[in-house]
Image (cartoon, rainbow, N blue to C red):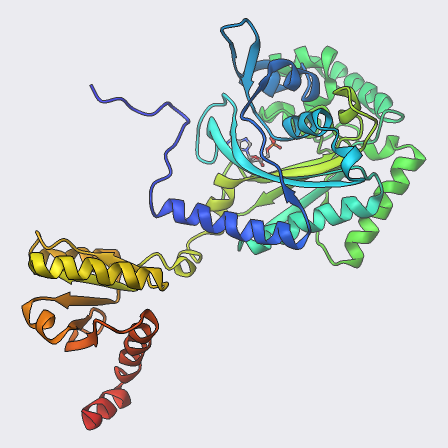
Length: 439
Ligand code: AMP
């Protein structure tokens, strides 16, 4: 019996993988411009790291983690998100002693045992950014600016940043109580989960996707009414900085995010074209997190974007920029040609040309079919006559024309490219006439 992949765990095949690489390159380039450095952390961490940071009563920790007991009895977990691991590494390596502010980014797979559907997998990928060591509103604005620019750099243009402030340890308890009281008065209308959450973590009610709960919670009290003066000022300053920089956002007074560690600034990004799973990313400030993981009292803020959802949102326009096709396809006819063509391909590839190579064991017709499929605009055919004159015959695949023994074997990649480009030019109606005259 064939062995199938595991439900919710996907392969990324050639073609698609080029889009992944493209996205990562664009993102890396932007992270560099914002002077963020990459951090690579393990996929497996101790289970308690997530239980303590994300929160015991969150969906992720309660029912979505892939945890297992290692042979020595330690409970380990495949990371469901990146922030906890980054903060663990920050504390473990005392990064605050090496630099006053750490600006970090990461890429990588995350694991959550959710019900798979379009845009929702069990192994998915995130790119994320974290800033540790600053709690001023300007850095919140800069992080949101990075998020905004990152989406644009990845050619995602139709998105909305939804912004809220969750208050802090001073003012949130009163809000929490107000939400609990509101839920309590409507207890009979809540789903079983929410009835349970009511005692332990009432703010989770605002996240519930069950339509009756969502409708009910749309009328729930909002955090804004409970902000203390310093939270109010902080949020106003973040908004002002964003307005100055013309970073668009909308206020979303009931965003709470699915993880417990957020305080003050919190945000989500929705993108068009994703269907039901339209959140492409989210993040926020997590000032108590480093301390709660036995580090110093260092504030932090960050976000994560879902790579699969970014790829769904960026559409097909990108494929044109990918230039997956080789520039030339070399087709050898016969064993002697094959040896020659292999050397040519080696040299031209080293000089920067994208070359695909046919196999002499296959007929010219079959190699042509392969060349066509590869998308190469030109095939260089090398048979006996070409070996003799030490120049390959060029077939222009787009214009269906042959140029016998036109590309000399001793040309550089640059010369080959220049010649092929000139064929494109002479192929215009005037060009044809020109080519006939100069022949
Ligand atoms: P979160 O860490 O839950 O705030 O998620 C941040 C982003 O990661 C989301 O907006 C999604 O784009 C992506 N994401 C989260 N969970 C999944 C999943 N199960 N499958 C695919 N993408 C996900």
